Length: 286
Ligand SMILES: [Zn+2]
Image (cartoon, rainbow, N blue to C red; front, side, top):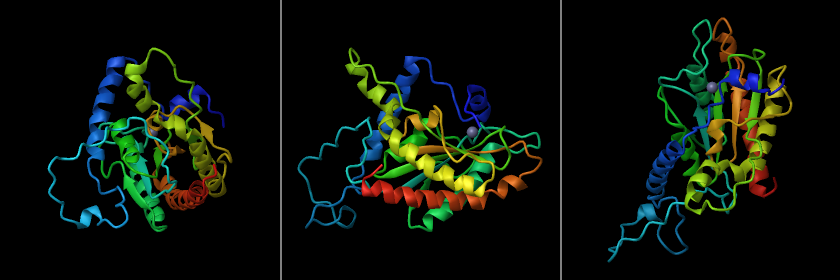
């Protein structure tokens, strides 16, 4: 299967890039505010040896409140490569049903079911799982990305169902290598650019994760590619962690049954791939 642009537009996983700088700026402002609030709790910072854990101690009186660290708008790879949190993103939701089949199947419903199944498989491995939505609501792209960016050692999986493609197959996408950032005259906007390019430091591990998942899907869903795809999936761009999109085909089937039957294989395959990726990633190789 080819990832030509027509195909990709049909897939529904691509969303236009905001064209107005003011729009990006607003997004950045919101993201910055969220990053500050996300970083405020100190519970995730390991206590130094000999000091009580933060959550179990009564805060000592302090003469001056500590100055919170400035938020980093450019997520960096964790210094200790540990994967403990898997963020699963059931795409669309709320007023956005995603792809719709003629029989009334809504992508947003199907991916939420899949996300719950994948969660169970991953939790069985002792991994912590966060869903970007629990019900039929529609968080923004940045809200979804922030759930991964606020964690130390996360990976991000966004789930879609296409309106086209061979029924019963799965395609896995990672972001292609981004073009080099412009290097001069943009210092005041560096934060904005960095937030929008959060994925750029994770292109290689994301590609590796996509390969591992795609192989699992090919073994379970006949007709699926054995190699993953690259596409400028909007949701992935702002994720500062290994991140891939999974797209199942498709919502145009007469009933949900064939799609629902893919759930267990999807969940098991993703869990195995994530386990393999975790071993590779934590060992420090790519
Ligand atoms: Zn979609």
